Image (cartoon, rainbow, N blue to C red; front, side, top):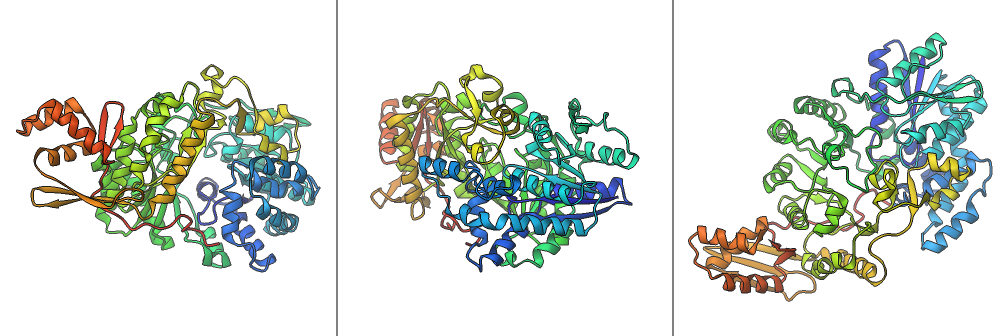
Length: 618
């Protein structure tokens, strides 16, 4: 059997598709006689735009439409005219949508005229391999481009078997995709390691795939959806990805001049925190929350093999959360290896300073710690299991260990008030030397999140997000099963308080790059050099118990706890004098206050900073 695996726009063009890599290796392992080929449609699309536009539409524009506009559906809209055989489909709706929200859409409009020819060329390339089965992987904004190509493939070769899978096919989304698109023969819902080989066996034997858990298939004109299994794929059955074809395509591509390619690996699936405390707004794990992780030794062997084979040192892990065992059995191996790796990791925000230090020594350069807020009450509403003070500590320690920290400040939770934000907003000017969030964003209602599954949490009214109106030509009841994002009534912060938060975050971002607040030891004295934008540039000198107090507050303490520590150190400090000093240091912007807890803000290091946008070249 010839199996052709496809990933379409808008997969990141600096990364191989983990899904294709896993499926390629899986098919070769369990069906060694099969021939496996791949279409890296995202790279092809970036190349196509670059060539056809005479260099006007560059990979940076691809990122602007495919990643930066993910919550406006621009990438899907670019291809919806091909899917529905109407170059103007959804145009008026998108213009109205963009005008109401001040969304820049010119680049998407510039791209759309090229979409039909691109889909036609992709179909020619796929069919040239004479496949029996074409398998599409779809995540986020890959649905419409994939559907457009699948439709064209079936139009040209009706006997071809088209299979869809990926996170866009999880749960009811997969069945809705199947029953509304007759040219899609099968949809694998959930993990594919067991289901896809089972489906290929049925196709070989010409039998009905009634026993493949979660599979959608056609029974005459009836779309059937097999019951989904609660069984999750164990780590031993997750293959190591094969990226050989991706690298060959990339190395021959003019896009290579615009990107810094990275490898993608997977150490774990699911979320160990979510198994116990599912963050109320998060739907990322879909129906597979159960946490499973490869042993650290195996993960290291996989990374070592991929790095040696592909000669790339940047490695992105797609785990939703790091396995805490990796601080014992994986990261020390990376440190000991001598490899000059640059790792990218998602972690929980309450890591210790020692754990963040180990991440830094391992070559980790970028983390996503899921900070989301600096206010403890809002974090409680999220069920994050962390405090605002701890989150500030994490951001500060990222500076100390040269870790780029990506995070969003989220708001809009049922039950929050302006009183939850005002104390935080008032302190944001003191944090300008620390890495700011990407912005302040109102949460959206995501399928599979507790907010979605339990309307009693505050979002009783919901409908498919308005952006889907310019993406799909489907009735609302079908969209309600197909899509991932939903519109609902606004909750929590609003009005002037919301604007104050947004303005304060924007100011933080604007002032961050030149700002520094640095500790320095000078004998027994502790110096703090303040070079923050918006603050007087000066050096504070602390000796005796104030120096000890500022050091103790690096871990975050209440005043009584701090007083107890100073007493244990042999400092006899009256409680009221300590309280006065704490308020003085707070007034200087050297401390962050989260309820009764104070945490010191100066850092011991000031890593080199790059301006925003230093990534894919425009």
